[in-house]
Length: 172
Image (cartoon, rainbow, N blue to C red):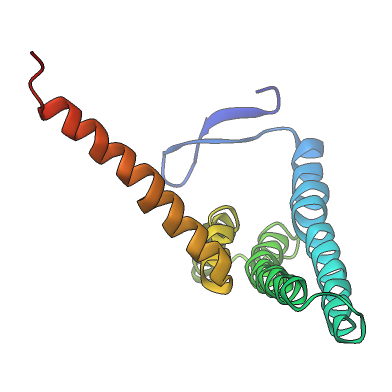
């Protein structure tokens, strides 16, 4: 609210909301987007994903029950798939943002348009990070699928059918 203003673009005469403070803009791009939203989360998830993978590799040598070992492997598979997904979704957004906001950006309008198109595509892909865990867990975990089917059909659908039957009945 403080550092963003609505201004009119000189080329297209469209109103856009953008930062007018140069120091805040540099902070937003280099500290927030590239570091806090890009490099640091990817580094942490890859590090802990590799540690989880190593832990599952050592599970075979421990004396844990077979069911627990399978659940640990399933959980680790879900985590590793999410780590790989986050890596391939976050890194392109971070790279394109760094290129677009670099001071050596060429003045060729075709290259600028291509970079803006790439920026829009990577922003859309970046937002997949917030919806993808559900689908990753659904695809990677048989137990999660069974639990979802149970909750949706056994609990909620039966409750909905019971209400519908009660509404259609005539009471004396």
